[in-house]
Amino acid sequence: MTRRAVVFGAAGQLGVELMRELQARGYATIGFDRGDADITDGAAVESAVAGHEADVVFNCAAYNQVDVAEREPSAAFQVNALAVRHLALACRQADARLVQFSTDYVFDGFAHHPYAEDDHPHPLSAYAVSKLAGELYARAYLDNALIVRTSGVYGPGGRKTARGNFVELMMRLAASQQPIRVVQDHVASPTFAPLLAARAADLVERGQTGVFHIGGGAPISWFQFARLIFQAAGVDPLVLATNHREYRTAARRPQYSALSNAKMERLGLPPMPPIAKALEEYFADRGRPAGATSQAR
Ligand SMILES: NC(=O)c1ccc[n+]([C@@H]2O[C@H](COP(=O)([O-])OP(=O)(O)OC[C@H]3O[C@@H](n4cnc5c(N)ncnc54)[C@H](OP(=O)(O)O)[C@@H]3O)[C@@H](O)[C@H]2O)c1
Picture 1: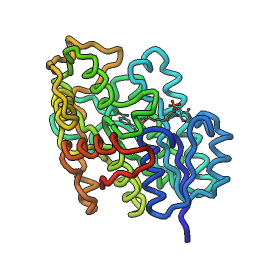
Picture 2: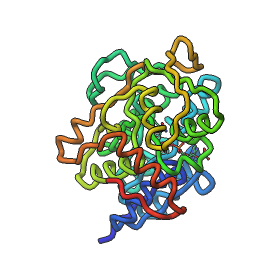
Picture 3: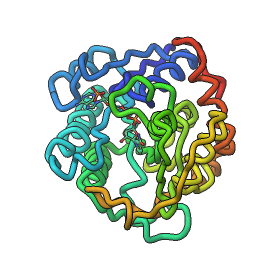
Picture 4: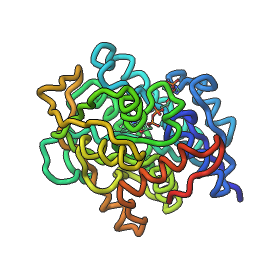
């Protein structure tokens, strides 16, 4: 029997890849972007989930403007928390599974090891609080929700979204011919969107519930990541290391937010390839005509 999937936030970096991944796996898939269904509208969410008779609902929609959220915390909370409640209620009503994506920023960054799923969350910003509240809403109404926490997502879709991604930001800065300053004292797990989509689909197909981390693999500072980006792109701008004291932002961010993929790997899912390899694929995709598919798995 054909499995039926609904993807919210289908035009975002992850949404684009999940649509592609699910279709390749034979799911009857329908994607909603913000224009089709605003997830803060409970009636629209309920009708999208029920109307498609979804078996599984992926929520890739999110309010991701971490610094702006400090000025408008309620806007972040509407999308990242209360809308997840709408989604959870709609899934419960339709007997569908919910896959909710969350963030490494639920942690405070005081650890010195990649965070595991049972490490204690302690968010440091309005964005991070709203994402953690979204996790709680999903789990409050559903016993079988799957929460996938990820980090620094970059995918070819980021070339078209309003928010973009770190790779595209670095490429814009490189084109400006100015020295580029990148923080060296913040470490994360930048994650390639096609791989995130594939691993998330694997978890669903293995019937997994609860919290899973899917990060990009080896922990890396944003400075080192920028250098790998320029290597993969074949450009050589001047990149200078800075730190969070020199580079102040409105939102507090965890200094160390690398995610451990050990729980996912214990299930037999493939480990993430080296970041340099994922970037190679990113830049190969970047040069491909629109609609051509990525090879990353
Ligand atoms: N990007 C990262 O670095 C990062 C890091 C950790 C975790 N995550 C999580 O990973 C998931 C996927 O992120 P991503 O990088 O794919 O994000 P993205 O590229 O910013 O895409 C998010 C999508 O959500 C849409 N959206 C925003 N508000 C909406 C609403 N009220 N109703 C419907 N759609 C709405 C956006 O539409 P508009 O373009 O119209 O706003 C956009 O298409 C999210 O849960 C995010 O929190 C991301």
